[in-house]
Image (cartoon, rainbow, N blue to C red; front, side, top):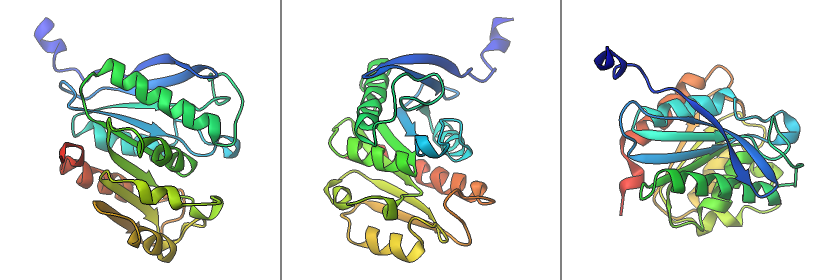
Length: 222
């Protein structure tokens, strides 16, 4: 009967976004009820195995979904079925912007959360800081050691959650604390003890950190 169907969880939707270098492969995870926020998550470095199906991204997506978010994950150019070739972070920022545009079109008027893991977290901050539709940023495994410059972090005014492993090879607990200390409020930093860059063995804590932050609906702040 139709009534029983209403109780079934909404199914993930797989589709392509028209990206600046061609097709971008994407998957959308809808929440159980009408979404109150739209989220975009960016994956790790394409030349080092990064794809949208990484467990870190999936766990973060589940946490956001539980708090009313429709969550989009996508493959950067040259990854999976996405067209184009890796562009050292320049074209990937354009890919990220295209994904945000897609969610703004699908969910007009909803606040947007933009986030990512590792390389993807840098893409998310660079694109999200300048976009007024992006109301909160999620930064996981920020790879400070791999970036020539991290000054772009200082221009962000949106609420930000940083989640980092204490043993992250690209920015350990001490380094990420020193970096986040200099940044404007509102910000939250969670450093997971004994965790590496990939949150190996600590995915539950990662998901819990995102869940606790999402529960405060940071995107709804004026």
